[in-house]
Length: 300
Image (cartoon, rainbow, N blue to C red):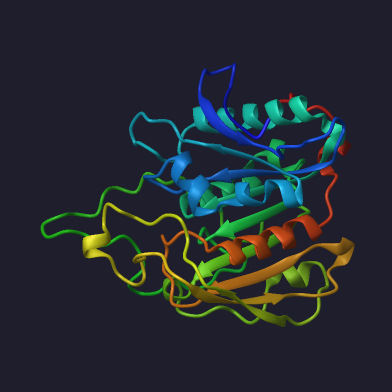
C-alpha cells in the first residue's frame, strides 16, 4: 500500500497510514501511533518524527492522525479524540490482522506525549495493548526538569493562552511496557542519571551508547515563530549530535532509554540518524500484548 489517507469510518475523520511498500500477507509489523503536539497537525508530526522513512527497512505501520479542529483547535483534549484514537487502533489491528501486530507503540511530541501518558494512566484500552511509549519532548517517566525558559515565545503584547491540556496524573502509569524519552538539550535543565521505570524492571545503571551524529537536519520546524524563536523552543533544523543512554538488563527484555539531542530545542524535526536509532530501540523491544486481550473492538 505504501501511503494512504485512511478514514475512521465511525467518525469520518481521516488520518495518515503508512506501511511497507512490499508488505507480504501475514507479515509481522510494528505499529506506531504517532501523535502531534498542541497547535500542530498530523502532517507536521509525520515530518517531525519521520518514522515513515524507515517503514520498509524496519517493517513499520505508522498511523498519524490530527486532533479535532473545533475549539480548542489542534489539541488532544476531548472524548471525541480519545474515541478517534481507539478507532484507529481497531482499524489497524483489523486491517493487518491482530496476530501480525508484533508490537504496538505510542509516540507523541509535546502534548501528544502528554496525551499518551494520560491514556496510559487512565484508559484500560491502551493499558492492555501498548507495548511501548516513545516520548518526544512530551514528558519522561521520572521527569526531567524543564528549562526555565521552556515554552513558546510570545510576541509583544501577546498573552499566553489558557491551558486547554488535559494533564496526565503524576507518577508512573500502571502499564507493563518499554519507555524511551527523547528531548532537545535546551528544553531541560538536566537529564536525571536514574530512572524509576528502569528501577521497576530491575535494570542496571544507565550505559552510554555511541553518540549519534547527523550531517543533515530534520525536515520541519515551527515556521510561525521562527522570527522570534528561542533556543529552548527551537530554531531552524540543522545537523547535530545526540547522546543516548540505555538501562540494560531490564526484566522481560524491556527497553528503557534516554536520548538528548545536543544544541536542539522543542520544535526542530528529528534528524534521520536519530530517528533511525529510536526505531532500532523500538523494534528491539518485546511485544505481543494486544494478542493477549484479543480484538481491539473491546470498549475501554
